[in-house]
Length: 277
Image (cartoon, rainbow, N blue to C red; front, side, top):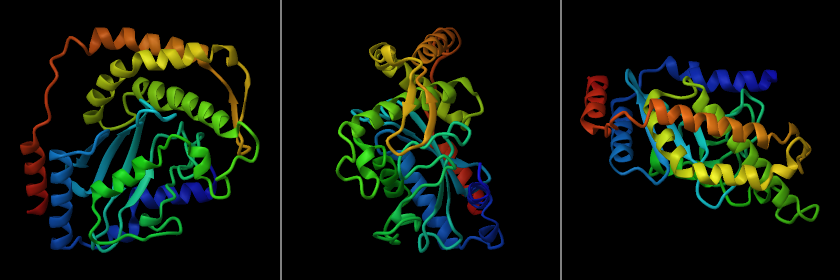
């Protein structure tokens, strides 16, 4: 990973400039309200888990939307609210990057940086205090679009016929490899609260995952040719299919027999109340 990438990740995860300031009472109250609203009425495909001892740090899981190359993938983000929230936007970092090797979108790079105007990392409409953690996460989720190739500035039209379809195939492959297999194989890939969500969605999308692999098996082992010129190795559909089957077998034994527990908002409210105190 480049030095710039390391510095960016370090700043977002630690926020040393913000750590020197005590969050304002009004900021904590607003964060608490945003978290409560997200827990009680989450947008489809979005889950959150605030840090138990610091509600300015919020973990988020976004499930890739239907009819996109991200479908059924698990994308883990970390958000950090500023001491004067909501007058400044949160800082955000994508953690699902294949150990800093995968660019999932022109606006989601391998170092975890998110290029989005409302968080001051891209040109365009800026953050407004009326916005919320929910609207921010929906904006991030909207990046997981049906045709991400065209989201790159200057690529509204294909530079070469078929590039958009080729790019979708690459993103779909990387979603299965990294945002499904790696996220579930690594027990430390994200906070434990999200694992039940991922397992439930894994079984829901399992037939889709395996269909993508079998439909593209003729490309197995072929070099991935990224229209944007990135180095991505080769297609690994056979390996991914084996991993998916192994995950299904293991999860059916270890997870399905367990009685699922529904999240209780009162527990989170207690965490928030104790933080406010």
